[in-house]
Image (cartoon, rainbow, N blue to C red):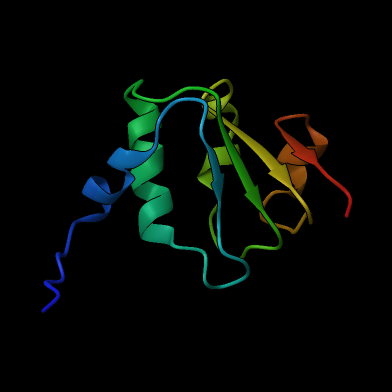
Length: 97
């Protein structure tokens, strides 16, 4: 018998370590509650140099904002409207595929 353990988003992102590479689901399936929890960890100085990869995502992408420089580095395979300005401003990288 398997026991399912439920954790909060803040607990779930505790497994992320500085230097990790994180891949986010695409389009509307990007887990916004986990993205927010990850960003909270970044804001309090618990993470640095975390590489984020994704294709096209919808919705907020706070990890690409200038305040997270040195904490999160977006390396996207598609530059959608939610990350376009920050990519053009040099706060994220585009990897053509």
